[in-house]
Image (cartoon, rainbow, N blue to C red):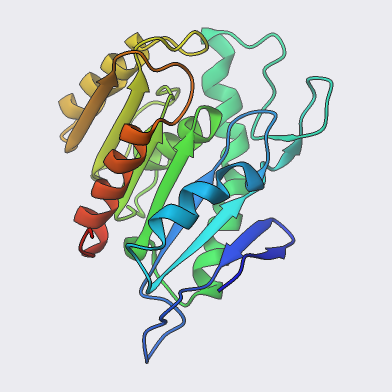
Length: 222
């Protein structure tokens, strides 16, 4: 199946859909600031080989990027700091929530059949959902992100956090901080600091994310 563009990004239907539904599960990809939904399509292309009965959606950030060139963002980085970041993430969540609900309705699935995968700012949004929503997805995979939300829910989404040790954009210390906060709150957390990797998704990170989805969605890795 080929990627199909729609109002909020791109969709990839399962290569082998289940007989009784459009898809067995849904993986939603959330890009980083200044990028767009197309940036993470190669990630899904690789993973779709392992999950032929799973749908993938890559969403565009809900706002135009205000940093001076074409792209999208989930929230503005202008004058962002530790004090106001929490509020910006919380304010950015309702539009994302509506997109997630619409996608689940499109594929006739519930939140428990959803996996969220984010990179950088997209990871912050995915972790916000895990920290605050009672509608726990099957998994969250967060690359090069940070926890910018207070943990308020009793739902316990399994989390996989992956971060490059050489990340010059978001320090790898944010990996440890997020892992401790979620672990202390009772979440199952896998945290991986990858030596020699910067602010990117490496080949090893790709495998770690795939394996997390295998555990959550019940597929078998090749």
